[in-house]
Amino acid sequence: MSTVEKTNIWVGLDLGGTKMLATVYDAEFKPIGRKRRRTKGTEGADSVTSRMIRTIREALVEAKVEPDQVSGIGVGIPGPVDQEKGIVLEAVNLNWQNVPLAKLLHKEFDRPVVVLNDVDAGVYGEYRFGAAKSARTALGIFPGTGIGGGCVYEGQIIRGKRNSCMEIGHVSVTPDGQLCGCGLRGCLETEASRLAISAEVAKAAFRGEAPTILKLAGTTLGDIRSSMLAEAIAAGDKAVEQIVRRAARVLGTAVGSCVHLLCPDIIVLGGGLVEAMPELYVEAVASAARKAVMPSFVDTFKVVAAKLGDDAGVMGCAAWAEKTFTTQKTKADT
Image (cartoon, rainbow, N blue to C red; front, side, top):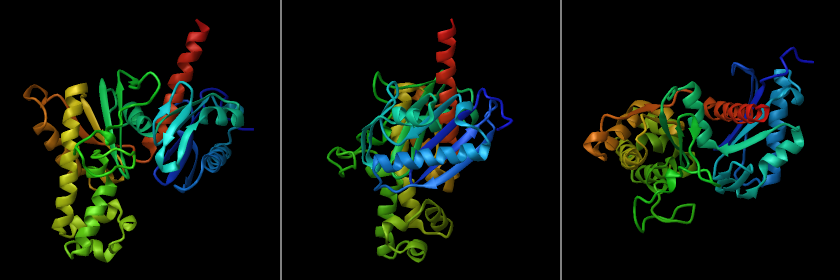
């Protein structure tokens, strides 16, 4: 039996992109066990849920913690969720619709479970422990295969009555533009996501304008990684830099609209694209955002790179579980 105290043990699991990460935290949010797995976009809900259960169990084994020692589990999912009911409303990349994930995990572990959007989790993690610590209003934007957004206001994740919100990737920036994976046209994701950038870079490589990319990945869209984009820019591939900067400017203009609506004091940019070239990306987004806002808003916000990397989401999941279930216990005791 573990020597870890049977109180204030929190588990976070973040399912984003092509990986899932489960981490067990003690009362001070120090990691005491973790397990990472890769995922496949073609898996169904049953298969992914089974892998999530195994991943959590293996993290608990590493931490020498029994399930009944856990105070709560937080899970981040890429897509809109009904946080009150713990239902994943849709996760396009997983082909999920209306999956009662909290109920399924509660049945398996007999512990309280909260489900939240993965970017909400990442932003909350940065608010509690990282680049947005102590901000009054923290807006987070994570460009990747898509573009996710989240906002924490005075310690609360902003959400609707039923749905998670801040789906900034599906804000229309080009009326009658390209078809997005969500079914709409002209979404921000079609112009500024890593997938959109890689598509343009693949064309440039085909035309002979991106020799470094051609050498590293050829013209295969799926093989072009964020690290390769950064390497190509460092090597002097001007076409790649122009494509990345244009996408960042489009994102920055959308950020400007968010500033008018929310007036955040901190805007956190995260994800692999930002991690690969933080200075270039943050500067380009910040410059475009300031050009897109009214004069009285120009000096009200800072744009910064996320600090926690892959840990942002999983820490945010665990910390949100702590906040949720500690608050519920406090209300029940009064």
